[in-house]
Image (tube, rainbow, N blue to C red; front, side, top):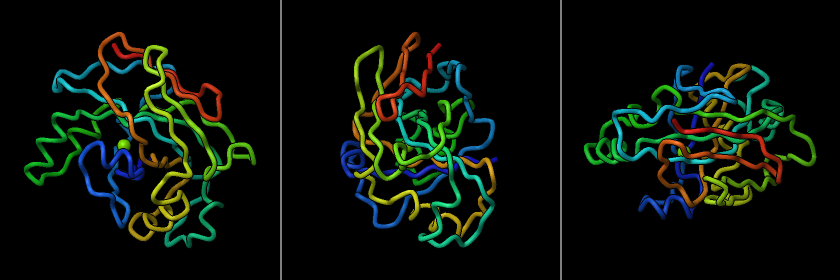
Length: 203
Ligand code: MG
């Protein structure tokens, strides 16, 4: 199982981090050891002083495929949830400054929190999803998938040129504006179409 992530897929978020709005998808991966299953807390890592949340729509691959055409891509995922792409922002900035890979900042243990997956139906059509993240009961991110720069189908077509997709792989589709720090004892809750699907405690 692999976790494929898209960076800077919402223009407002790219701008808040002073990044350019991309013309092709920005892709990175997290290993299986990064997965934080529903109900598990994240332990604040000792190597960072700036752990940040990025709430993202996550789709689950249901069919193996390579060189998937965009028009058929929707046959390759059937479940959706919200996830947190936890990021050690201080390490990421240092790595970016040096032009180095950013796995230590993005792919550490527990950095890919996922909520409970729900089947994709007309109500949870991936191109038309509203989602929110609450931090200690206050809404800090309020996104809509219509604001994605690259659609899920486009992302699948793009990444499957390079990587064979397998059943069970997950795709984190990018975060909207409003990312920020977490501290120990914080509580994160994610709502998809108004329904709570994600709950993560920081310890
Ligand atoms: Mg992200």
